[in-house]
Image 1 (cartoon, helix red, strand yellow):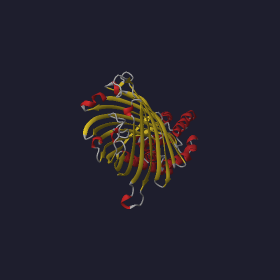
Image 2 (image 1 turned 90 degrees about the vertical axis):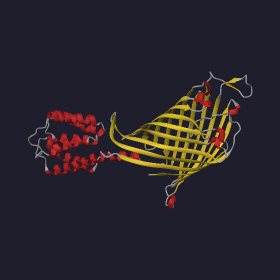
Image 3 (image 1 turned 180 degrees about the vertical axis):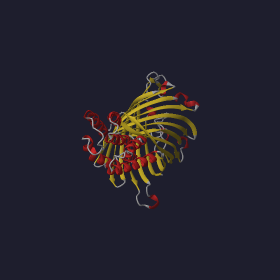
Image 4 (image 1 turned 60 degrees about the vertical axis):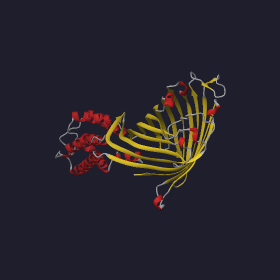
Amino acid sequence: MLRKKIRGSVKPLAATLLLAMALGQTSVCMAEGGDYYPAVEFKPELEFFFKKGMEAREAGDLTAAIEAFQTVLSNQPMLHRARLEMAVAYYKDRDFQEAYQQAQQVLEDPKTPPNVRVTILAFLAQVKSDAEKACKLAHSWRFPVSLSYLYDTNTNAGPDAETIGHANLNAISEGRSDSGSVVTAGINHTLQTTRQLKLGQQEATLLWQSGLNLYQRNYFNEHGDDLNVYSLYTGPTLVSQGNWRANLTGQVDYIEYGDRELAYYAYLLPSVTWTLSDVLEVTVDGIANQREYTRDEEQGRDSFYLAGRLSVARTFGKDRFGVQAGVQYFNENAKANIYSNEGLEFFVGGNWRIFGKCSLFAMVSRRDENHDGDAPYTTFVNPTDNIVREDNEARYTAGLNYTFVNAGWLTDWKLEAKLVQTKLDSNISPFDYDRTQSFLTLSRFFQ
């Protein structure tokens, strides 16, 4: 929705189209030195630059277009056709002040025909209106809230990947099950600035997104595995008029585990998405994460985590079906080498809009993780055996969601049922585990 709004704001408006029509009606008279500006003789050698300017503007290279029209006007300042075409180029370039001045100069010429004067006046009114809108910063606020019932067959598997990454804190071969609740709430703010950045031949609108989020997972009995995450983030987003968007987010997390302070995480999260067609997108994103643990027994886990991911998303059947697949490389360099690791993760998922606002979704991922070979584990079976730890994790997610429509107070709330099955196989058996988490969630974005 946001991309469509931004793209729509830069489309040629009615006044611009009227101006182009009026210009087209007068071009022959100008070229022949006729009754439009009878005192000006058109120099044929400038026709090359005029056509170059028109072609460049049509191709979206507004800088080249403006330079070509300026070349024409530096030789023949009274060729108002070129001046008006340059005004349109400035307008498309969102340089409203220069567009206004160039068109105003033609309007003030007493030889400008009445029908052209009317069109220029309409164009000037449109430029003035757009300039006033651009001076106003657009703010939008969203307040996400969700409430979940959770059943977990292995609570002591530790914090999971959906909240703070893979951070199993202990040998966990014997699981404990429990039910609980998950509550999330946040404040998200987007500022659409007036700044337009040029990257190559394309313009991009600069947004700034910030927010505060709270995640709380509380078990009914196993309180030693409760988890609280408080997140603060901010950063710029660029949305192009063409086919890409990018953002760079800085984020800080404060984490409590088992009702005790556990760690601080600091992130840089870059991401770029290219829209190759109406149904195909490619995304490259990354994570740079400094992890600082505050408990004395966890000091060796302090680490710097890097990850890079490539993913492709494709829709089918008028956006009724969607598929996403990708691969991620990760590397964690910990203070104690025994916790350092690297590996690859592969994933593929999809969603199917069954009807209206009801959808099915599923995802499968595989994570292969190798720990530092220079720091072998001493096994729990035989203290004299040193083994380098290797883990293979498979995760299966499936669910259904439905957004209520015309349902009284439930309108715009989304109900989601989700099942997450995780199986980790390790060459050190106490780290093997199976885990099934079932969620029933009610959520909504307020704005």
